[in-house]
Amino acid sequence: MKESEKIQETELYQPIHDYFVKLGFEVHAEVNGCDLAASKDGELIIIELKLNLNLDLLIQAVKRQRLTEYVYIAIPRPNYSMFSRKWKDLCFLVRRLELGLITVSLKGENPLVDIILNPSPFNREKSMRAAKKKTKSIIAEIQGRHGNYNVGGSTGKKIMTAYKENVIHIACCLKKYGQLSPKKLRELGTGKKTLSILNNNFYGWFERVERGVYKLGNKGKAALNDFPELAAYYEGILSKEDENG
Image (cartoon, rainbow, N blue to C red; front, side, top):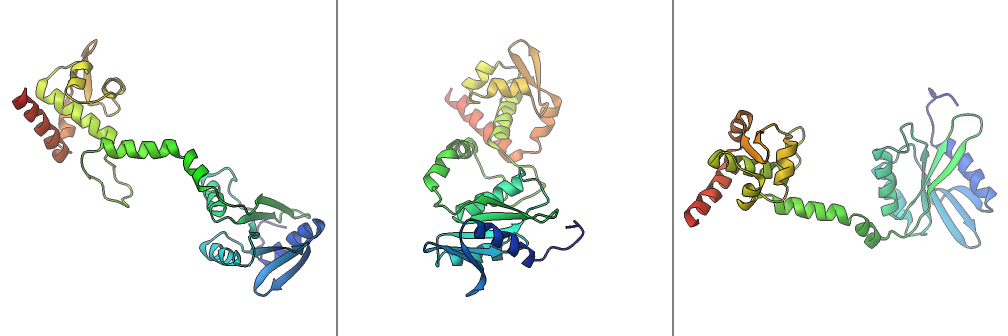
């Protein structure tokens, strides 16, 4: 099949039909609204054919789960990489819905049918255990922020993170007290990441005066003007500490 030719849904039918026939199934098309139905020893498989994996297809397939737990969706093999984030995310969604996934390659004389996923119960607890590190990271990020300086849904805008707040905190300390060591900064509450922030100096705000001593550079002084709310927040904390100290 030439790549320039437009694929039709009907072209997916015969390769899948033949695949399941070889497995011993009796296969028929357009059975009570189902694109393809296969049965063997009382077991029913339903397969919905589409050119793209989209919301309509997923809804249709999920409705078929009222008829049998063995529901597949079948699409042409995508042109993009099967190792791409897009494909992995689509597979995760299909697996999350407890559906099966079939791809059909129509290039060449012999179409190739691949069973990418078989329908199976989704283990939500196992999935959450696998993402436990990410969950802890989100909680830590929330705990590391001291205000809500972002707008949900924003794109193309710089995001205020707990890390950047930490950088601003250090900058405020150096602005107020001048040259300080990481130890002294930690005593002022800048946290355990203080030394790595100063050493890495991703934003170029800090200058090393000598071994173990840092100051706020001109770039850092200017940058604090871009974050007046946070700067005022940390300056207020430092002023209270001076009063209590």
